[in-house]
Every structure is written in structure tokens, then in C-alpha cells.
Image: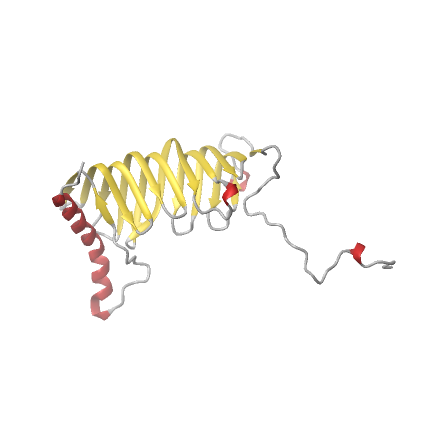
Length: 237
């Protein structure tokens, strides 16, 4: 169904209102806009918009789509509180799909925070919610995960999974109560602090015929100026 032009115009106006306080604060007394403010437009579209401007609560339903740069969020319904402020809260429901240049996440529901004109974090819930990394250093790593709850920190580039966690890195599988994974340096911590809500342990399954590929582990080449003892010859005593 095509989105009515009137709805598109209203959504565009709300986006401008949401950035308005930030732009006004930055231009007051000739002050420069804070570096944290995103300069990329937030674009919204939906089949229907029900907007309570007085209380700054806006409900979008039907093929809801939000884009900003390489980030997109889709759902059947979205409720926004505080859109006309610099710190808005969003609730997405039914067939939620979040995608960035680094990750792809799907869930039943999601809560997100926009700050400084850009999305800061999102928490998704599902049975389960799923995560896929899109920019792993090498294609054979195939980084995937699923859990009941997944928290994505966009600024730090980290994903935190809790409740019935399953995580796959290069075909090897990790299970635990809590898992924190960095998309930046591909490091993972399972059950941080050694704590487990269910009293369980970290479980790892290694795919036959492969070495254990632990995220963040790297082979350290030997410095060229330090040859093996076997290469020196003779008695070293």
C-alpha cells in the first residue's frame, strides 16, 4: 500500500521538530552545533499516523519504516515518546527488523533510544531474538546468535545477549546465560564475572575438522630478530 503524501509530510515535519531543539540550542548566541548531533536526516514512513502533539506521543502503524544513513528499522507498529526532544523513546511491535552496516537483528518487539539526532541503543525481545554480523573480518566466520533478549549499543558496537543464549562463531558454538560480543574487535565474554543465573556453565561445541576459533584470539608471529634455539647450532651453555 502506498503511503499517503499527507502522512509522509507529517512524518517529515515531526522529524524536523525532533531535531529543532538541538539545532536551536546550537545556534543560540552563535554557538556551534555539538559534534554529537547527527547531520543525517531521519526518514519515517507508515500507512497511518496518530499524533498527540500536545503530549508528544506519536503512533505509527502499518509497514513502519525508519531510515538514517545505513541504518533501517522496520515493524508493523511504532510508538514514539518525546520525538520533539533530543532524547526520544521508541517502542516497536510485530516483525521487528533492525539493520546497520555491521549487524542484522530480528525480533518480536524492540525498545530504542534516539539521542543527539541518532539511534543510540536498542533492546529487542523474541522467542528468540536473532543477531547476525554482516562485516566479520573473514567471510568464513559466519557470526550468528540468538537469545530471549539482545541489547545492541550502536555507539560502542557491542551486543549483549541474555536468557537461553546460543552463539556461533566460525561454526563453533557457545552457550551460556549471558554473552557480550564486540563487533569492533570480535571479542566475546560468556557469563561475565563467572556468574550464571541458572548456576550453569559455559558450553562450547567445536565443529569436527576445524580448530577452535575463539573470537579475539590471534596468532602472534615470532619477531624476526628472535630465531629458534634449534636454528643457532652448537651448545649454548
